[in-house]
Image 1: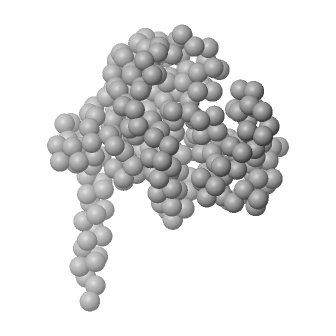
Image 2 (image 1 turned 120 degrees about the horizontal axis):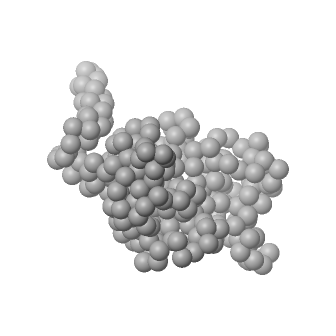
Length: 254
């Protein structure tokens, strides 16, 4: 569904992303994992042309994204990120309806879609439809942001640290809800995170990036069992160490 071929982004002589080759199969969730500045977000933004590549190309559904006007492409691809970016002067329903309205959907279809999406992200439509973003908790705002990304029925979803600013309980609940939603809708997803545990729990495959280059791509099991580079081994050591500490604590219980 998504193909990156020799994708490169240069800033002067410095490469933010260099010669990146990746494929995301239809219905797959691919995690882009790595530390700050490794090129994850730049890669994601090149997929929907928020950033234009210096070299290489992106294909979505077999079509070169350069053949589409950027605004047309972005309406076909759902996009959500950590800061959410809800319009503060619009209601929840109006925020979700932004892209369908731009696409010319009629009012009845938009209203039905808004209510269906609110139910999907487990927000009661009658209670939340007319609220403003400042009347929502952080977790509720993230749910609305996800609903907005899904509003125009996209097949492809790009997520940039969507749960990173949430408390652990809310984050865990939203991760589980999101997994159910994306499987129900058969979405193809690229998901950016620097959290190793989140990558292991959510990803069908994980692509580890370092200094703009792909280091290793594989299933969570492959990366845990057979890290192909020191950077991957170091990343995988963190969840292993945390799991071992939890096991040790449980072993001390009477």
